[in-house]
Image (cartoon, rainbow over all chains, first blue to last red; front, side, top):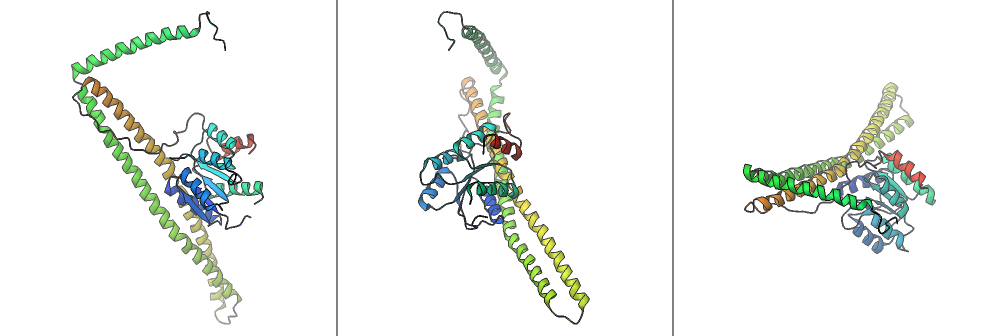
Length: 130
Length: 210
């Protein structure tokens, strides 16, 4: 089990969704959570605070989408190791393939439950030996 | 690749068909123009166009109501969850103390209290589970909100098309009620190539080696 203090960044343009994900993560034992409202905000926070350990991101957002954020993270030497879980309503095959190719660590389609989130997180922790 | 120079390509044929189509569209437009003028249908168009801002407002109202309702719900759940946890913990601690205590009087009452405390703790567990479900259900706000926004965009588009037609055929018609307030575009409602659930996502990811 990873550290309950694992620092999460939750990225979604809908505040309600950020709240839900925050609560679900809390339910799973993680309470060190910061929120960002789009890719630009997320990238700024990732670069300025510098000690995030996990990113959960929506896809469809203004300014910078989740997939662009993912690509920027993978391009950045200081951030590229970060696990990125996509949590999105985009259910098209091409979206999922695109995310996988861009280096997503996992992909969850909305609507989802705490159980699904738990399962995907555990899988990523396992893969990364966290 | 196969675009060699002087063989008659299907492209030519296509453009011929397109010409016929364009001509037909042209004729239909001219006819529509005539009918609109004769029947005074520009009025109806104007009316249709003017209903769009109203439709947009109503949709925005729905979106706002959904947002407020789910925020309220989540707040209520957030304040309830710790209470439930506290009650559950209190029950567990109390029943342990009672079980460990050395009571000479009312042994039946003690047993019953311990058992009831267990029941309360179990009920609290169910309430906790239900509260989490209520929280999860608020996700509808995200997807439904995006869909409403898509329809709002469509209404804006239809309004602008109608107004374009109006301007052409009834130049003195009202200029515009159009506003193109930026709303985030959402996912299209289940496109053909969409997966139907998390299982399919997992299968697809597995096939991609993730």
